[in-house]
Length: 365
Image 1: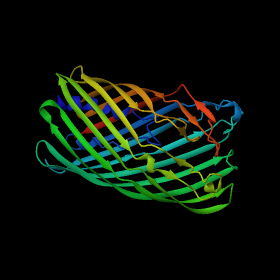
Image 2 (image 1 turned 30 degrees about the horizontal axis):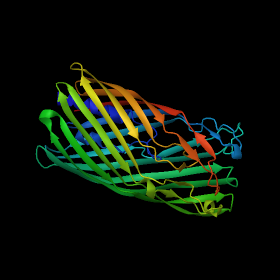
Image 3 (image 1 turned 90 degrees about the vertical axis):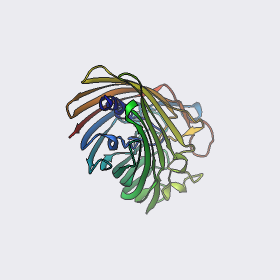
Image 4 (image 1 turned 30 degrees about the vertical axis):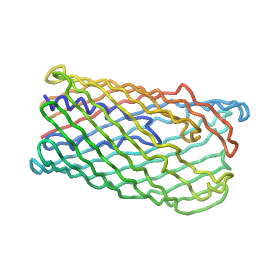
């Protein structure tokens, strides 16, 4: 029964693939380390955001159109159980990303601006069970990062940053009580430093390194049985976005010495849900998500501020095969942007949303 109930907890991860704080995408889940025995997993997610705003009167009053492109995510995981105490897990994910595309056929001040950021990561983790209740886990994360941007409203600025690789670490611990399907896991992921060789045009033609650190984070994941065949599960994720900054050399020549991308506040994202096993094969779950709005101005390349969401999912288990998936609706928080050093509201982004779908196939053997 615990194995079937644990399957419902994975639904939160498979359907939470949208609009977390900053440029967070995968949530850096390590859930596969808790699967029983040897295990392999393939997951796929697709997100369709609708993010649009309207400029204020001093900045033209035009509508931006939908400036946030659809995107997809792929994940892979493999776990090998050496013995009853020691296991190794390899996880591939796409932890951070952005896809900005302001439609050119508008009168909005940012029309034609585009920006793309992509990352991939491979994480290798060892888990050691101290006893029936306590375990520790840790390992290394190898990550790539690359970006490109074109911002006509900022002195026709362009930047192309080539792919760079960096290494960070992951450490954590977990407490479990199998008799009530209880698990509480705490995991810390370190920042990862990158030096991106960047070719810029606009305020100046410059080729130079852009130093970027993807942020440190802490994930707290929990689940517990609350009634026969019923599981309460959830997570809390903190990300240190206030220390994240992308400041290419030539972009800093603009008035006010701005950052291309930065965030004023850290983010904490909450998810909680209930899973229910209907029979030996089928389980279902519903979950709620929340990330508070921090206020202040948001970047024109990321005009969102917090979100609330609801997700529905289902899971089918037959022998060693487990298929789970679901859909999540995200209400994206309202945001305001500014332009240059004016300090005035340049645009208002309201009534935005995203739809995310996820599918995961796991095999235990």
